[in-house]
Image (cartoon, rainbow, N blue to C red; front, top):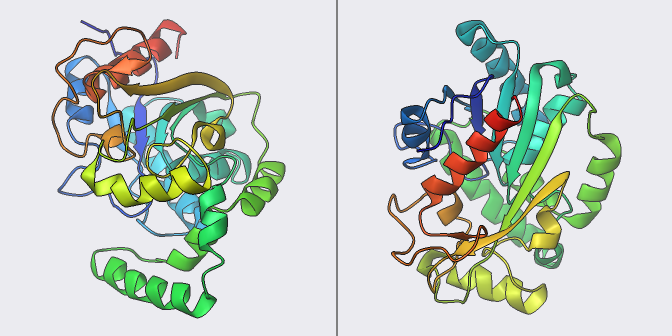
Length: 273
């Protein structure tokens, strides 16, 4: 049994497209971590807000978490675009003193080559689709949905500029993880985007390649112990069930994503965080 009682509370920061709400973005993960000793909180930023706007929300919620928990800092675990929002909060909003560590799960630190290609679609089409998405997201609770700008923020050119303006703080431990599907049949929800990324850029979790998500201390490329691998959705336990009944053969194979998070958090505990 892993001991996940860290010195500082865990703040889970979701990615683009979803919000923290009645249906938990993180599946079984928060409850499993709590049962193993973790104190868990959520980012609660907009689903499709810009990095800058969502970082402000994260900063406000961070202060509430620190006040409620009585802790001096938090450990952040962020999925996808949420990792960029956490980095912006740390570097541009001056929250480094209140963050012990940032562990990112498939965050596009280096931008997406595939998104570069997608952004070459006629702008009026992308903006029309984004406007419809923004309308839906605002109905569901987003205050400042800005889908088109979010897409721009996933491009490699934006990433280069972002990384220059948001250097890592020496006060924070930065870790990153990558995941890959094993084939187009690994996840029916991710089949089309996986095939698109594979043609344009290579092996991925359906959205991002390992090279695009590497940042800080790279913990490795993880996949499933069975035939299906791990998709961008699997990374946050979308299905709420184990990935495979086959036992992992090495540390980079995973049969149940909750076991991965338990090891991730127990690793923070072992380093005194």
